[in-house]
Length: 229
Image 1 (cartoon, helix red, strand yellow):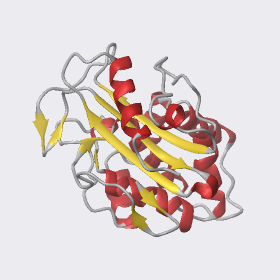
Image 2 (cartoon, rainbow, N blue to C red):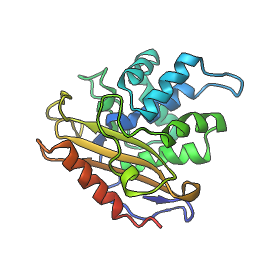
Image 3 (cartoon, one colour):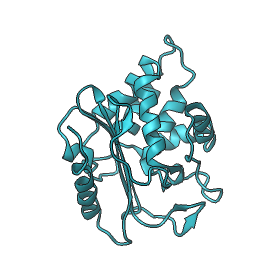
Image 4 (cartoon, helix red, strand yellow):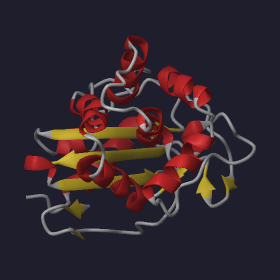
């Protein structure tokens, strides 16, 4: 958890531990798509609709569209260089189309939000954070994405959640390049408090067979324990 007022991490635990990203990587997919657009270069309506769906409803089809259109793993390679990410990487070689198998860390996720808040051009900031502030309770796949930040804290907040390995999902098996592709993953990330003071990134793995609701309660409990004031 990063405190923007003090410029320090107020709480941290294994910030450089690598997790498969699940839908948190949609932040990078969105930023890459918006990167080279000037102030007068408006998004086509179809792109705007897909971007909003990908971020607010965590729509996987929209993410897949941008991923394939913009070069797959090249999306991650470019964003790692642009944002100075240190442990983020694209999906393993055996899973090139699986954007959710990209590797992320809590520390790199905080860097992404810091870029959005402090360095991104205002139109880009609005295009990404606007949908995150309007995140729906149910994702496009029907999963409840109100665990973690949305349940633990009152608005204002902006969130990008991630989940992977829960039925009817078909998770991978084993571990590749230090990233567990098998156990259920549940992540809550985003901005909390007046003026987006706090950046929260809680990335978790759970024992095989853990029900989605139980994992959500665990993540919400972790987030509630943070010293957000």
